[in-house]
Image (cartoon, rainbow, N blue to C red; front, side, top):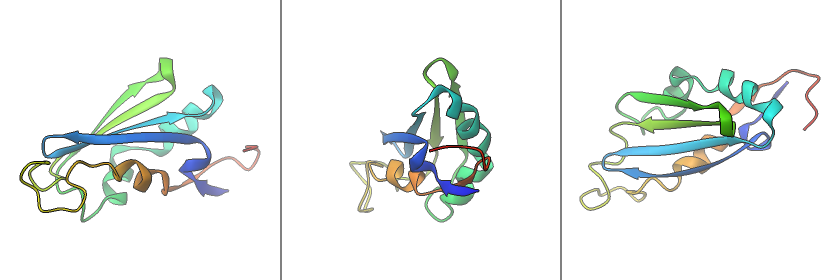
Length: 109
């Protein structure tokens, strides 16, 4: 079954210079492995194709059921110099949650 990531997690994003920073936190501990396995750096990079022009780093925080992503070369130079509408990366979390992921058919959301 394929569902929106927003059904399993919430997210928060912001800027770190020219990089966007996005934390994704599973709503339930048992959903964390599903989120962790679905959100690879390659998958996130593909999801943000044309927006993220650099590498994607992923950090796992299993004790809080979370992943943190740093999307390099995403904000057009950063908040003070960028001409992008979202120079501080605040919409990255919403865009991340729109990603559709495969989940087991037995998952009850």
